[in-house]
Amino acid sequence: MDKRKAIKIVNDYIKYIRSKSISVKNAYLFGSYASDKYTENSDIDIALIIDNIDDPIDMQIQLMMLRRNIETIIEPHPFDVSEFTSEHPFAKEIMRTGIKIL
Image 1: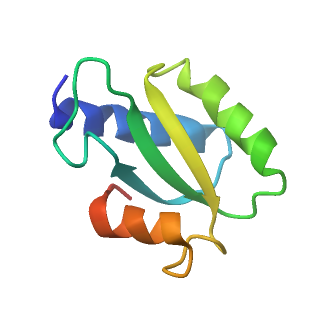
Image 2 (image 1 turned 30 degrees about the vertical axis):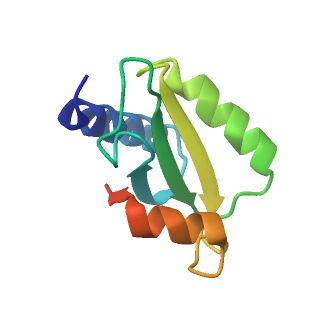
């Protein structure tokens, strides 16, 4: 799979999870597909910036379950809107090296 196909999968996934009432505000493709270092065994890392995550663990589980309807190599990484800032080291790295999808 190439980067273009990975981005299409990400867009399909975002559309699907939004249809399930998950309020995704922004999304970034990051990791091996963003840096063009992917292999046939790479997953698709997606940072999902979501409004009002009450329970981060529950949100992670929900996103992992929903990926089964699109593509199982999706690796969702949810962030609450309030924590996805340049003050958060992981978020800062994603903003710097990732590809903004939404």
